[in-house]
Image (cartoon, rainbow, N blue to C red; front, side, top):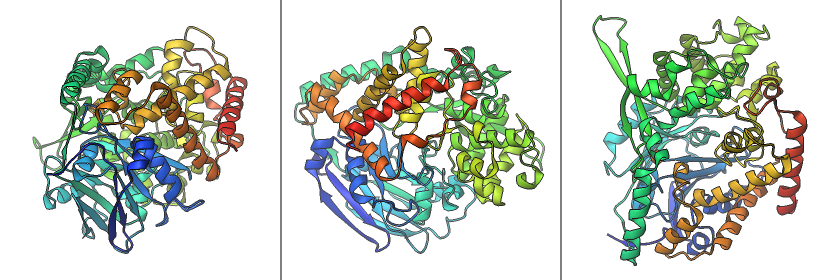
Amino acid sequence: MKPYTIPTKILYIDITKKRFWVEDKEELFRKYIGGTGVASQLLLDECPEGVDPLSPENPIILAIGPLTGVFPLASKTVAMYKSPHTGNLGESHVGGRSAISIRMAGYGAIVIKGSSDLPIYLSIHDNKVHFKDATTLWGMTSSFTAGRIIREREEGAGLRTIMRIGQAGENLVSYASVTTETYRHFGRLGLGAVFGSKMLKGISISGKSSLKIENKKDYRNLYKKIYDDAVSSPLMKKYHDLGTAGNILTLNDIDALPTKNLRENRLIGVNNISGENMATNYLGKRAACAHCPVGCIHLGTLREESEKETHFYKTTMVGYDYELIYALGSMLGINDPKKLLKLIDKVEIYGIDAMSVGVTMAWATEMYKNKKITDKETNNLKLDWGNEEVYSKMVKNIVLQKNDFYKAMAQGVIYAADKYGGKEFALAFGKNEMPGYHTGPAAYLGFLIGARHSHLDNAGYSVDQKELINNYIAPDILVDKLINEESLRQILSSLVLCFFSRGIFKPEVIIDTLKIVGIDLSLDEMMKLGRQIYIDKYKFKFREGFSFDNMHVPHRIFEIKEPTGFLTEKYIKEGLEHAKKIITTESNI
Ligand code: SF4
């Protein structure tokens, strides 16, 4: 067993040549901490300018942080790559056992390049990498089955992670996801398609390294404080009891739950699919990422009677959370919990991003109802709000790309709207389909200026609900606030902490935790580093063609009242102009 404190080794894997090697990059990890900080530097170095995201040269970079395995809730792995969905910065985070497994194998990051002629999966155990034949796994309908087979073949049960793609990744759907440990995902921005383009079905990672901590007394005290905060805070209790699904009623009550492609802002019958009802009547069990005492993962039980035999039931555990309930529930007008769980299960089986597919299907429904597309395009599916059966078939048609219309849908709502029309209600920002927050200007400016165009970049939805609902904030001041929040979040992502723990890991607590693992940073240095990482991401975005001048803002968001009133184009335009000025100046563009 080999002890170490900060993971500074990078495992490089060349799938084309079936080669691997390890480099120790202590300087890089000391300067950029780990996670997003290190991964964005690796992306700038390893991803050739202008590269096709589905070409062998596009790297997959997986990185963890120095607190992984040391403190609770440092449970995530960050993936960076050029996104096939947006053609620009790709970043996605996942929990499960991914981070702890990478750390136990002895690495701070893994860089995968190249592509294989035949399907393979990677088996990484400590300092060994095996390139294994995955021909029999390729084309399997269910990503669950592929995961189960890898599980049976590989060592390290209990401590290993198994990442894998489904048919959506194999078929290069631009928003295909990667699943780890069944219920966690690199969900957004199409990492699954990058795996698919490399003929990489999955990765199993395990190891037997141990951690060495020098100052045990300070470590124990700080560990206890963080652990106690995690198990006693009311917010964490809410995440444990209801999960993020607890927000469904909150958002619905303030007219902020996007419903039926945001033609409405609340859902009739919402109580049925609320976190409260799901927890009372459908919850089968809770689960947690490795080294997390909160356990916010909620699994519902879906019990279905066999069509062939009476009194014969199939019971499936289906993970649900706020974003899934929004994208596959309210956005499609589904308010029946059983139908919702069925549709979520279908999306899981194919390995596709729930938010992107839900929003794209909602756009298609509005197109169909407006007679802008017909049965010819939908392959005779009669699209109608709330019809789970039709949407389940549609998911399959998208993944298998049954005709030109489904081929377009497989590239996302903006691509499809460019070809078929309806761009004014194609709900994507920076080409990334919208998350479930029609809360006000901060949410929308947040999606637009966030480096990933994700609600998690700067949590604008929270500013709307806590501040803008009561007080006006000028667009330039709001943008400054969002950029500052996103800069701080670069530190959380470099550690790589679960964002739910941001109330526990306040900046001064982070400084103390870093000291324990041997990294000395002042508060000022840390904040400057966060800003630098944010700007470095924008350097990549500008290099790959991003511009503030041609951002699509769907008109629909101005038509439907949000909790702070009616959003205006003028406000969004002024916010974007201010963001452009700040970010281009700091990026020296
Ligand atoms: S709070 Fe939830 S998402 Fe975060 S680490 Fe724990 S189980 Fe995973």
